[in-house]
Length: 516
Image (cartoon, rainbow, N blue to C red; front, side, top):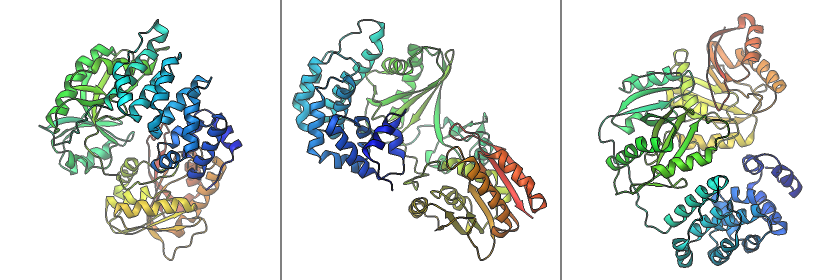
């Protein structure tokens, strides 16, 4: 994997979301961590990157062993840059630098920028200790001087509460089962809800209110529900109200309290967070509204804990009406735990399951299946879950993808074999029954021209890879290109079916092709 120089890292950090992008690149992360630490020690650079890298346990351990890094973060608490003071506090909190509490308390005493204080308070909560606890219990959040300070006042208040909670005994609530049959809304890939409905009905569920990306069903057994693979998340509908925080709290708080109390061991308080997915009026501040909703919902039984929550209040809609849902995080969804690792543009597993359900009438039991661009193995694994297969073969040109696919497949319990190769050079001893593939999109992996070369070559090679009468299930955003290339193949291929769907804001299409 690539190692970046300080200059390359600095240039990347100047880009929007630079730290996030660096952490998701195919680079040597331990080396990136070392270089970022050097940059920070030298001149306070790369602090945002270090904070992101600290989310990875092994890198956090590595950073905590670097005494010079901790010392640099302590010194940065006195920097003239307010942003650096804030990031220094966040870094010390992540490192749990036990001897930094006094320095942070002193820094808070002289801090004149409100947006910095929340990070310092949270750092004290993370570091802990008697002195930090005494300070936080005595700390008073200064009221907002005017409306321009309201956002920072709410943020500081929330941080103070969160920091104090770190010293309080925490009750663990274990999911014990639904007290009665309850209505749930399941989210599915766009225009593939009929595949989810079909799957649920096979499992004995009754389906209602089927829409383009969701449906409802009555659930009494969560384990039985999670036998289905074509939905991404399950939500408890609460109701519909105006987007006013007080109205939302009046409707949502009793529902969340009762849901947590009735199906969990342990007593209140219960920890929640607010997830706002509503369109707001021009000029409205999303973060401030989330904090106002959370503050309105808080009571003796519900505690706002956005970094350590058990239940989520989902708010969806617009500036006139919002729909409210609750999502439990105490029930563990293990359906796709085989995905220990993925690569950029990996296929979402519930999308893979739904796409295969869409194609199911054209697939066969005990088929020999090949995926020519297998990536991290998700599509093949879900094909193995759908029905028994005689063999599953994955091919990819990238060594890293194949390594990840092998690890994921070992965890899945599905039997598949993988090989590093260019599918246009791959030779098979006898044609397969099925070819399935999440093809490179061009706008995420590769380019439009590289996609055209790959797609054209793959379609020309299909009669060698797939037996006569066999099928190919192709999933791509480059649907205009693929349609044209299929037509150019003439009578060699027949397009049996196609369907648009949605994934990550894109609108790819499913193509089912028969080899003639």
